Image (cartoon, rainbow, N blue to C red; front, side, top):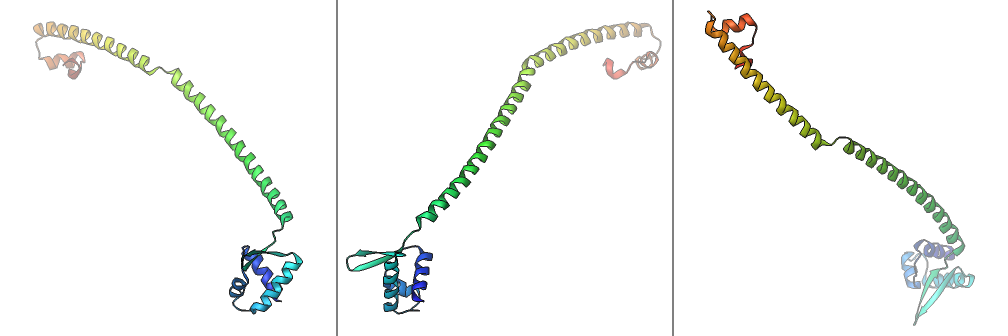
Length: 168
């Protein structure tokens, strides 16, 4: 009974202990001599090993390397699968970035904003000059008509159909 409890305790804790530490950790469930006999038996079976430091001896569980290799291989496969998945996502994102950059270049290359602005400003200036010229001509014609017109300026505008706000 003491042998099973000591072995389980060492295996669960997975760290080195002296006999006194084991007795204290088991809360004095077994006496020191019973724990020492259990440890000696486990050492003889090869389940634990002892390491002597001067007068004191420390006991550790023998690690099961076969199980560890299988576990490491399983973990390695999982990590490899995860790495492949991440690599696939990375390549997808790289393609998406390339497509977005191509679209951006196409959009910025198709409209030369400064050239369009310059052409629009040139057209606006030309139309503004033409408007000013025609407005001046219209005002001169209306002034000539008003010299011999019997009514007021507003009556002439109403009769001809001119909006007074446009002429001013």
